[in-house]
Figure (cartoon, rainbow, N blue to C red):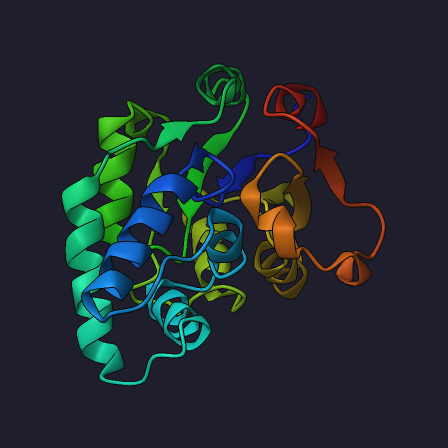
Amino acid sequence: MPRFGLVVFDLDGTLIDSIGDLAAAVNAMLAERGAGPLSRRAVAGMVGEGARLLVERAMAAANLEGDGADALSRFLEIYDGLLPGETRPYEGIPEALGVLGRRARLAVLTNKPTEASLKLLDALGLRPFFAEVVGGDGPFPRKPAPAGLLHLSAAAGVPPGETVLVGDSTIDLLTAHAAGTAACIARYGFGQVTFDETRLRGGELMAVRPHDLCTLL
């Protein structure tokens, strides 16, 4: 029997490798303000808590002051114009979703804006796998608040104890802890750049590559 009735996925760094386009949009926004570029690794360490915090962190790293709302609006405009760009599913993700979708309900919980999330999932052919997609600008507080994950569990009719959140960042881990679900850490994702190992409780599942999800879940 399947271990979980509901498998919820983070998006950036878990389902898709999107760091190239995120860094390109950040650096284009910074360049317009006279600042030099940040490395992909630096931007990777800023992703995970929504576009607003990503832009705030990038502005701070570039020693820029100014209208954060204007910078956020411009970043989102640039980013939307790039998509799908070079963003692709991690190798093995479509195949893993095909296997898991025959065992359990699948959903997405991301701090990325909903419109951009759906645009990417559609463009990359991943949207049909998921019963529901909850973005960071929806009716629920962003991760690590557990409300979005608990909503997905309730909507699927699956108790939190039979739900697992798959994600690459500390934010995803804390979300699973707060909701009382299992956690599967995507070790292949770029969120590992700043992952806080001290927050692990033991018992978390570890996916070194996407294919591991088929055996772990």
